[in-house]
Length: 114
Image 1 (cartoon, helix red, strand yellow):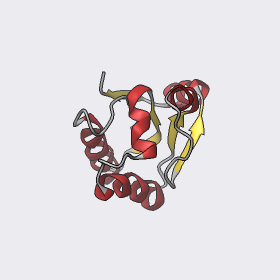
Image 2: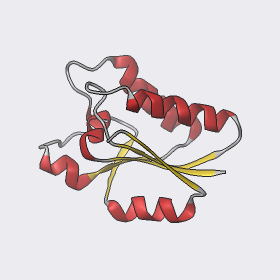
Image 3: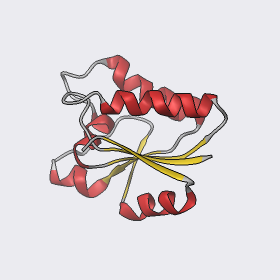
Image 4: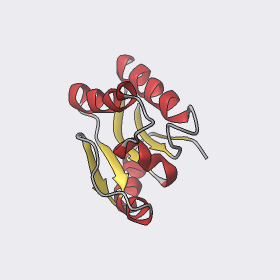
């Protein structure tokens, strides 16, 4: 099964990013493919980190990208609206076209957060 994953919440306000991360790890361990993880709305905070966020939460996404080859894309428009300019390693900017592409290629689309 191929999944496209969207993360919509900040790690400081919701458990949904962590739940999404655990879902991705379980899917990969079961032999499924994650086409792309798209960080949108407040979810872009996962790509930039905050002084209040823990190093563990930051490194989990980066480790996922490095070890499993999962593509982590944050919405560049959402980041610009929030004044975010320097993402963490492992994250790349992209637009909604990349999200639509992932959805079209996926068997399932799973969205974490409001």
